[in-house]
Image 1: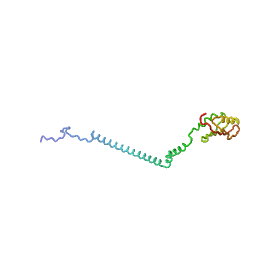
Image 2 (image 1 turned 180 degrees about the vertical axis):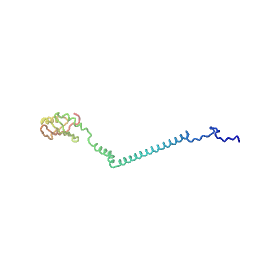
Image 3 (image 1 turned 30 degrees about the vertical axis):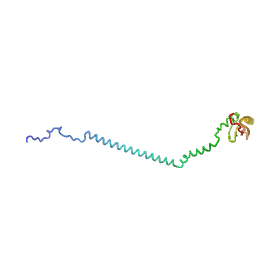
Image 4 (image 1 turned 30 degrees about the horizontal axis):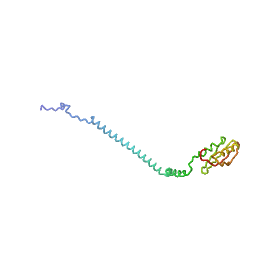
Length: 182
């Protein structure tokens, strides 16, 4: 038995099969699994956030819907109805410009007379105004003459007159005779 070699050292190192469990491929596989788990956890977290936001938005929509269906909202929704009714009433009135009534009279008012109120009634074809003057009775008389001499007014009448310490307050009514510009 001289040819039997019982020594294991004489074997080549290259013939041995290397069984390494923790080599490069193992680390890549574990890294891929860890990355997959991490991505899955992130997606689950993001999905939870989106569901929470959707619940909040759904609650807001429900709150706003109940607010719109409430009695106060019915008053707002009725706004167009009210506008239609108002428009029907307003369309019955004379749509003439109130300034057209005052323009000819404005030219006839004396500079020392301050007009307090002015009313133009197109239906009655009549104007009424209250004024104040510091010029006394003479200024009131001149104002009456100026209004009487115009082609625009007729039947000029002094309604009331009150004398103060330094001023005279008076009210005049006149009929409108001319509808066009002077």
